[in-house]
Image (cartoon, rainbow, N blue to C red):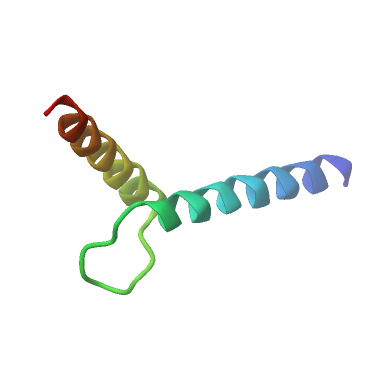
Length: 56
């Protein structure tokens, strides 16, 4: 249906955004793909660390 197609496209867009975010945060060890939750946690930690560097 139309609604299913829209939802599929929305999820593809969201997943692509998470992939881009994974690409710009440093990965510490491990080669498995971070979950969405882990990606958001790592991004938050990374942004906080960058803010701390800028304050120095």
